[in-house]
Each structure stands twice: as structure tokens, then as C-alpha cells.
Image (cartoon, rainbow, N blue to C red; front, side, top):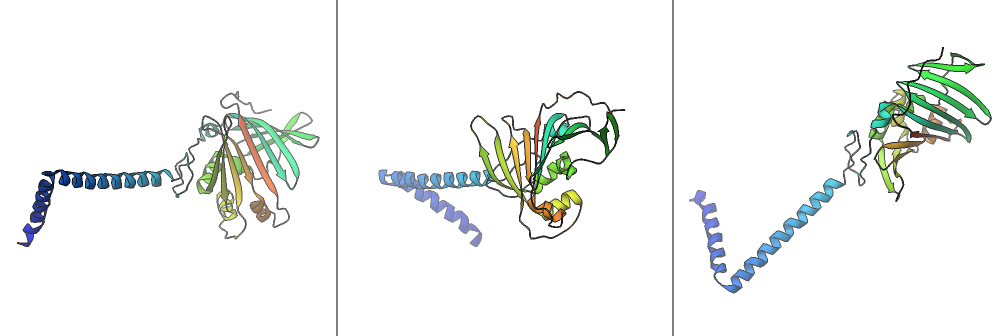
Length: 253
């Protein structure tokens, strides 16, 4: 008897619907109930869809934390490694600018600081510095050089927290991130530390084709950690252009 109760209940429901359908008042009641059920289903569907659209979507697909902002830019052209660039390092008010080209894992760069300038050629882990028209083995001129390699950029953006997105009409889109010094030390220095310092900032500039054309790192906290508090102000900004247009760079003799 107990096994037949659900079926009996179902039959009673169908009978009730049939009886209501026989009268105009009953039809009105059925339409009202159907409308309530339909409206409730639409509300649930909208809420579910909105919840799905709030998840952060980085190009590389490595960040799955829930955010309220979406980022869908691409790093493909930076990864390809063929571009013109301008890198500016503002270190406690002292500005050093690097202008150069990168192709086939090689870079030809001119560094300027005030009225002084030097020419460099970088490939693999080798740095050549020009002196009196002759290139000799030198020291890497960049401060924290690995922060702008493709692998580091990808790792940093996947671990950073997306805080805002600003879209400018007829101009580029800006994404603002924050990242801890603890995380940067792990990515850049392979060191495990645990600091309760202010966060560092990252600004990613994206063009109308969703390609990254600029990255600015505000590294006050990380730089203070690296210099043991002797310096506490550092911004590194890189602008990219002329993707895929740089000819092969020959190693100077």
C-alpha cells in the first residue's frame, strides 16, 4: 500500500487540474499558478547567469578566483617576442629609460639617464655593453630584469588580484591589480617569505584588439624589501609597439 501512495497522490493532482479546467474560474486559477511558476523560473535563471558572469577570466586561464570584474585580454604578442619597447624605471625619483627592439630572444637597447647614455645587446644570459664603439661583456642594466619576461608576466598576473577595470571611449582599457611582496618574492626570487607589508600594484593597458600594450608595476613594497628599507619608491613601466615588425637582430662582433 505504501508503494502506491505517490502514484495515488499524482493521480489526485491530475484530477484536480482536470476539474479546475472545466470552469472559467478554474482556468483562471491554473493560468495564475502557471504564471507564478514561470516567473520564479526566470528569476532563478537570471540569478544563475549573473553569478557565472562575475568570475574572473584571465587570458591564460590560470586564475579561477571569484571576482566581480572580467578580464579577457591576450598576451600572445608579448609571448611571440617581437616588438619595440620603452621601459622606464623611476627609482626614488631617479629616472632611467631604456628604448629598444626585441626579436628572436635578443634585445638591442639604448639606456639613458639624464644626459648620459649607453648601448647594450642582450641575448640568452649574456649582456654586451658598448664602450668606445666596441661591445664587451657587461652587467644587466635592468633593475629586476626578470619581471618583464613573458613567463614572469604570466605568473604575476595569474597570482595578482584584479581590483578594477576602466574602459575609455576611443582609447585603451586599463586593468588595476594588487599583489603582495610575499607572492612576488616567490615568483621572481624563488624565496618563501611571509610579510605583512603593503601590496604592490600593477596596471595593465589593453588596446582595442585586446592585446596588452603596456604594463606598469608599482613596486614600493617589494623594492623596500629587496633594499632592506634603504629605498621605498619604485615604478617600472613598459610600453610595447610594432609587434611582429622587428627584423632579425645580429649579435655584434
